[in-house]
Image (cartoon, rainbow, N blue to C red; front, side, top):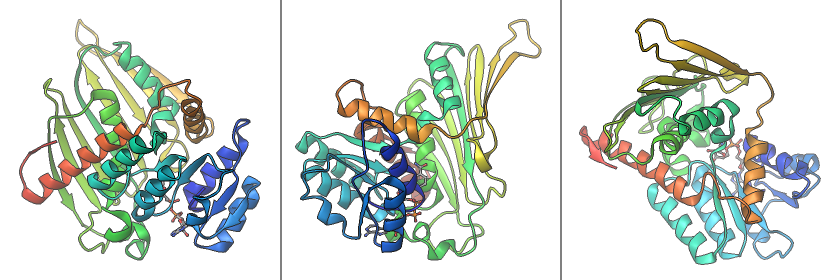
Length: 330
Ligand SMILES: NC(=O)c1ccc[n+]([C@@H]2O[C@H](COP(=O)([O-])OP(=O)(O)OC[C@H]3O[C@@H](n4cnc5c(N)ncnc54)[C@H](O)[C@@H]3O)[C@@H](O)[C@H]2O)c1
């Protein structure tokens, strides 16, 4: 485990808890953090991530540092013959994502991107129902995702272009891009506006508002925000005979629910069914299970290197559009 912050801690504990894996070493530039997470995961602690690369007792590396280091770490680990789970976003740019994918192909090792949202139960169930045709043919989709930022964000790594790559459109927007890609595929064109409305983030956005258009005519819109004063996640998919609406992600995002609407063909109110997921966030555990199953060769990988590159390609198009003020090809 490289990076023992919020996400590294979570992933180290999942790795330690699974019967088929153990967390060998936790690395963080901050020795106190490394030691604390190592204790929680039954691992040893280190402060130099490069020292892991020559060790024969490590099969897989998880990179959960600030985005600015993800490409360098993933590339080195793949070259050293390790499987890699790299946190989202897949680096700071499309070019870094493509570099990581090429390293994985060269090394013949597995590269997975941390798209845990696919494993949130309401989202996973929405995908099953979508694939089963429950809402008919897709027409359009909307996704809103945000929180309220915090004073001093500009002094954290997320407030630095060098360390983060982009602002909120990159930070939470990459999950949105991945989900839209997962449900609807790669869009043909993109359009976006960016705002830096409240937080003093220089040239990084605190709001990203965009649209995608697919060759099929499907349109998807997204709004990612660090001025969403009350945390919000909402993904809506509309089809010819119904709709799927996911709200909440648990915790501060509210109880996770899936509402399935079935169009009333005679007109009037639709039938609806609400499924609530009150339990703990199991997405980290289930994503780790999938990663291990893919390493053992049993299952195709969700959140693959190709998926990561696709999401970065979608973000890249949104940023290019925002820079020119015109729709661009994805
Ligand atoms: N999948 C998700 O939903 C999700 C959610 C939040 C963050 N993330 C991603 O996880 C990654 C980490 O985010 P976080 O919120 O845990 O950040 P964080 O700031 O809590 O943790 C980052 C850690 O990396 C350490 N670090 C910095 N430089 C290092 C170096 N050279 N060597 C070793 N450690 C170093 C820091 O000391 C810190 O402990 C980011 O890429 C972020 O985008 C993913």
